[in-house]
Amino acid sequence: MKTNEVKVLSSLFASARCLRWSLTLLCALGLSACTTTSLVLSAAGVVTDTSISWAIAKHVHQKITEGDPLPCVQLNSVQRALTQRCGSFVPGSIKAADIEVSGFGVCPLSVAAREAQFWPVLTELLQKGARLQSCHQSPLVELAQRHACPDFQHATPASLRSLSTLAQVDDRAVHHDVLRLLSCPNSRSVGLDRLIDRWMAQGQLPVSGLGFSPLSALHPDHLNSPLALALQAQGHTVQAALAAQEGKLPSGFEAALRASHWQALDWWFARRPELAQRVPPTKGTQLAWLPLARVLVPQFLEQPDTQADMLKFLMARGASPLQTLPSDSGKTVLAYAAQLNSPMLELLGSATAPTLRIGVEAPTVIAKQGTPRDRSIP
Image: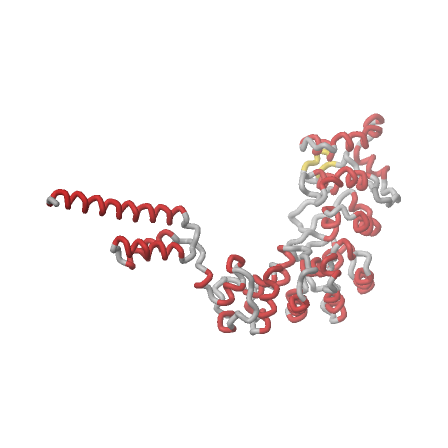
């Protein structure tokens, strides 16, 4: 074979190898979201075929996967246990030495408590010495603020005991949002509400110094419970329940309104009838608000199909579409509904029609209407 022919063939083979290398890189780039060892193995194949150094292959792989999550094999035992993509938790797999250097940047107990899938990990963390002092707030507070009423039905007895431990050994768990969580239906179904009774028996729910009102914190379903009666007998008042609260979950009255919880709303109205018309501000910089107007806001009600019933319910208890908004004294609830193009405009208009015909001003209407005693549920 002539020299020129050999050079041509060599050039063709080199071009093929370059093309193969380029295609491999392109495929790797297309799959850059994957951080498994398959990319490294692909790079190893290229090394074999092209004589490119292994160091270069590793450098290319690092650039391709830069910023991707670490492969599970590179995580420590706590990180793997609390990372969903790493598969199911294997009991006994956590090393005590990894707890203090978990690498999460947050307390492992908080990560484990706030998601039901990690509750088994919570048990092992506590057994192997995880310290609550490393958490900037109660892990139960994080759970309550993420899931106000988690499904505890599928929790194991060990997980429920671990959650109970967090409520008993950490004073920071005595919190508005945690009390809401512990008094919700899912908690009561597994007996976690007994923790509130224990707090009260131990003097952890005093009338002053809490930073929140237990009556406001109670789930709407729990307002007619023996616990609620005991709290009132102890001196907790509805007036205090309407003040500012330490917590992210809404106040008890607002929670009842959002949930269209008729019995709970009547509990509040029986003690403070004026709440149907106007709710006082909880902080000095805030304004009062009108339940009738708040209900008109899209997505405010958890059950949007109850909007018409809720408006009727409030108007039967003294709310008027002719009330003016605290934030705009020139605008009535009726005008606000028109501004929102609310489908409830006709309902509100029909409720004011007789008043408009006789030309009575809105404040007089409210005074004459008073607070009807009809507490029937629509």
